[in-house]
Amino acid sequence: MIITWYLARETAKPFAAILGVLCALFGGYSISSSLADPANGLLPAGTILALAALKLLISQDVLIPVALYFAVLLSFSRLHADHEITAMEALGGRPAQVARAVVWLALGVAVAVGAMALLARPWAYRTAHEITWLGGAQIDVDAMQAGTFYASQDGSRVVFLARSPAPGSPAGGVFIRREVAGHIEVIYARAAVPLAERDAGGQREVYLSGAHIYEIDLADARNDQLISAAGLRLDPAGTPGSAPGYSPVAASNRRLAASSAPRDIAELQWRLSTPVTTLLLALMGLPLSRTSARQGRYARFGPAILIYAGYYLFCTTARSWVEHGTIPALPGIWWGPAVLALLLVVAMNATRMRRLARAAAA
Image 1 (cartoon, rainbow, N blue to C red):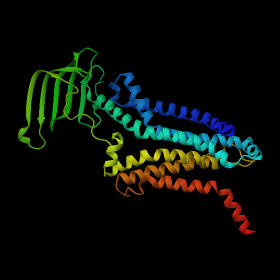
Image 2: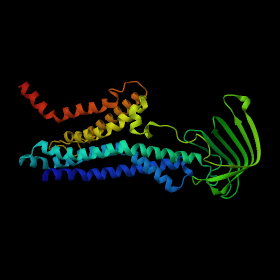
Image 3: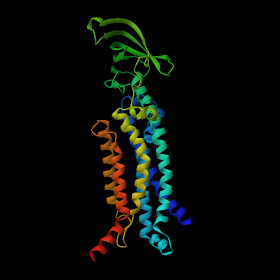
Image 4: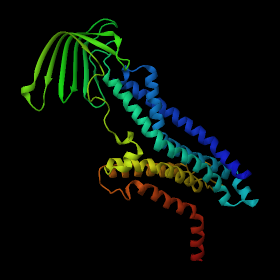
């Protein structure tokens, strides 16, 4: 047990460090990409950070397995290079005892990854979609820049300002296109100014002066209307049917399990495969960490990177095939873990296979 706890601790330390670096890099990228989105640019700084945190939570089913994979590779490469593994074997330690520490650590991490994929992932996607929709739905003429098109996530709402003076002053040349009750509504107003009152969602209503409203019925042109108004109060979030639509990544596990749609099947299989991927990648780090006395502790990092890149590419490709119906639900995306498991068996028994080959040749 002392050896098992020692090996687990030596693996956990680089795992925490690698995961921290990956989270910092991905978090910085998420914040920069959110700020670059014109719709999200209207959101408060706290909401932008919340959106980045949700994206970081969603990415954990990828970041945690790769962090554990390279942590096992790094820690056991060091143990081999410092001859600690050789000393353990000389004192009667067996390879199974060495692998036991990784198995216990990987099982605990795999359970956590599975819980994130099945519970936290859909919740984070739903919340992120609502925040993104909110950024495209609100009409904050004080924060909008002239000459920029602000669109909702689904494209049902577009806002454009020709002139945007100092905050508190009316904006000029306001163009709004939105979908309302099965038809398209286009509003052009000479000026727009935000009102002090806020709606139930905390958004400020907008007062449009010199407004012209074009009601366009795509089904029957005879229902088209043109309305002119000297003044008009506009509720930014009052568009029926403008809320985020259905998305498999945000759906519950029960709904995905009851669905026969290829996109739903692919999403459910991806969630279920994440703990399996975590365990297999962690165990793959063991045979890759075996180095000879002449090799450095980083000698196997090149092949390890290629193995992970190939595996991730294979899994994402298989998921795309399932989504488009190219391959059936079985084997679905399970091709990836199956191939990795086969590669793991070969790598774990490579030394024994070489011995048998030399004995057969002799």
